[in-house]
Every structure is written in structure tokens, then in C-alpha cells.
Image (cartoon, rainbow, N blue to C red):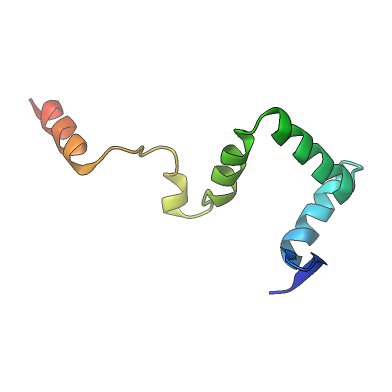
Length: 88
């Protein structure tokens, strides 16, 4: 997997950069504008980092990916209790 080095420890996945580059061309933007908008948004709303991280890690295209955000955060005991209540 190739990387682009902007500074010593500032690296990007080359394939990802190519994909983003194509999207930016459609929007008539460049990487500098993109990063500037990103940083401005984070300064105004720091919670965006969590939203962006969650979205970037979301799986797509496979069965388990379709369940992202659908199943929830309940633990086994709560699921069992809910199941038993539905049976009654």
C-alpha cells in the first residue's frame, strides 16, 4: 500500500488520496481547501471528530456492515430480558 508523505510523520494512503482527489475534482476543490474546511468545522464543533471517526470505521457492503447502527449497544442480559418479555 503506497503512502504520500507531507511531513515526517504526516502520511496518507495513496489509494485513499486518489479517491478523494476524484471527489474533490467534481466539487472544484483542492486538498488545501478540504483540510481548511475540515479544521474550521472542528474548531466550531469538536464533536465532529467522533462523528467522522465513526463514519469512517463503518463497514459497508457485507452482511455485518448492514447491521451497523441497527443492533445497538445492549449487553447480553438486557437482550435476554427483552426476549423473555416478548415471549410472555
